[in-house]
Image (cartoon, rainbow, N blue to C red):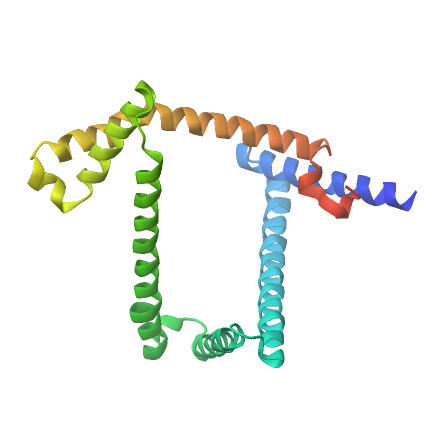
Length: 216
């Protein structure tokens, strides 16, 4: 009985919150707007608590690696904990404007940004290699995909315009016009799928959303 009550309570709370937020989005009802504002505040508090729990979990997992001297892992974990603590302390020294701290700004501009650009470049090479393996002209559809992919890739590479001045123009057409109908179709289908997921969640039929909390 308690299990059923807990499950139905979770369903009810989810439905009430969703209905309040939807009504507040589409209609200007003062009472509903006040409740929606309170729910947004609670969401901010819960998100902060979740972030704190995530930080604690990181310290626990990597602290265990350092404590047990896990081969090949512990020194990476030690470095992560050190950087985590160092940047957190720097941020707390000027909590209203952390970027005003020159050390914090230097880490963000010259370490974090550079690492992000490096990761993006590595991802680009990975995508290019995956495209090379995937592009095989086995039939007409695959051949069209191959041709379009070549033009788009050469459009974004400096060598494309050197090979032929019209490559950026053709690649731009594929990128800006050719793919637009398919992209819009994909977005519409994704929106309908999200609506279906929302309705299933409201009706308590989406076990993946509720998980073990609702006894699923």
